[in-house]
Length: 286
Ligand SMILES: [Zn+2]
Ligand SMILES: [Zn+2]
Image 1: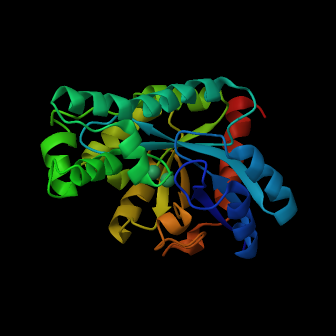
Image 2 (image 1 turned 45 degrees about the vertical axis):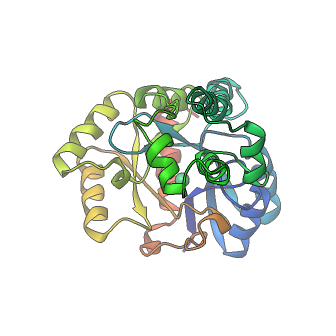
C-alpha cells in the first residue's frame, strides 16, 4: 500500500523542519508522496522537490492560501501548481507585504493611544522568529500597560479593539483563481474551521466555490470527527469533487501531529494522487 500525506508545512511558513528535512522524514516514514503546502508561500518548493529525488519520495508542489471568510477560517490548498511560472509568486507577494506592514501599523495605532512601545521592543521579545500579535502583547505586559497577555488582547489587540489591524486576505474566488492561474488544483482545507452551522450551509458554500473553480475538498484530516468525515465524503461524491487528506504536519510547532499519521490513515493512499493527476490532465491537458 502506497501511503501519502497531502498536507505538510515547513519552515517556509510555520513548520519547524526545513523543506528538505520534511521530505527526508517522509522517506523514513515510507510515504510514497507528500504535498508541501506552506501557508501563503511557495518558497520551500524548490528545496523540497530536490530532496524528493534523493529520498525517493514524490513531492507534489503545493500551497495553502488563507482566504477571507468572516466568522470562520477558510484555507484553500493548491496542488500540482506550476511554481516556476512566477504568477502565483507575484500574487503571494501581496500577502507577504501585508504581513510585514501589519505589526508596524498595530504599533502606530498603540502609539497614537499614548502607549510607548516600539517595534524594536517587540522584535526583542519575539526572540528572532516570526513576529506577531502575541509578541506585541508580551511587550505591552513587560512595559506595564497590561497585567497579562489576555488583557493585552482584550483591551488593545482583538478584533474591534483600538489597536486592531485586520489581516489582509484574498476573497475565496481570488485565491482559487490564483491557484488555477498556476495550473494548480484548488481544494478546500479542513472544512470544519469554516464554523458553518449546518450541512446545508456547507453544501451551498461548496456549490458556490465549485462554480468559481474549486475542484476538491479535504475529507481526511486528524481533527475531523467520524461524522464530519462522512459528511464531507458524501458531499464530495454528490458534488463530484476530488477528495484529499493529510496530517497538517508542522513539526515541533504542533507536536501532537505526526507526519503521515491520522486516525483514518488507511484512506490516505496513492489513489488520491492518481485522481488529482487525472483531473489535471483533463482540465489543463498536461
Ligand atoms: Zn489550514
Ligand atoms: Zn495547513
